[in-house]
Image 1 (cartoon, rainbow, N blue to C red):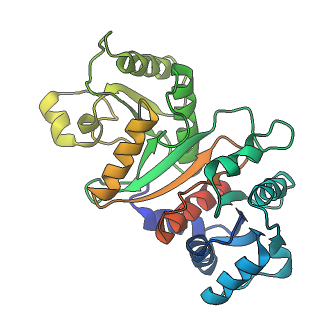
Image 2: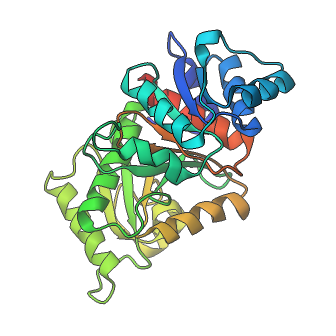
Length: 302
């Protein structure tokens, strides 16, 4: 199976008997709270807000929203709010974490703290899910947000993280394309060597639960007409669920191209910690944050 669009993902997030509990760090941000309370209205989440209480209450008043007394922690300092939010997750009081009005580095610092954080020892990577009017199903691009220049072993972990996300969503055997500029191995292009190595790891059973193709170019991963013309043989060709990019710059540019030039929509979460983490940009739209809430809830609810 696969998810055709974000409506299918939202229905998945709504399907659980109980709404998931999201801990929002430094929650005094109007776009974030718009998204959170839209998701609450849809039965996807119940929020716990951590941050400057007077500012949060002012925004809630504007939105016509409210939380119970035990759903609001007054922690005015930004870094302290992040620490408190992580503490609540560590204590089992939330299903996933969301960044509000603070920098990503401020959010991640308490997450990765070796003594009090919520790391698992696994690589943390960013999974971005896109809906494009030019593709027949939802598509993951990774990693365009966390790991800058992944090594071969890190690419393996990034594949495993993305496959785990899709397995949680009900996919049986996700199709993973390891992107390069060409579809042949070229010793002068190290990315193709990594792609070939990952393909072989999958074939030998060292990367499980998915089918990997690589090296593979973007058109061959997504466009069945290009596949027919070039004769590329792989179950992934023209039907990829996941694209593994060679570095953060490629992932960032590809993602923004889907959005800006392709009219796409996106959701994103960081995985590899104890719970999913939503680290959308402070400038992200309320819709992007809502879709990210749906993705995090669907992953944490299964």
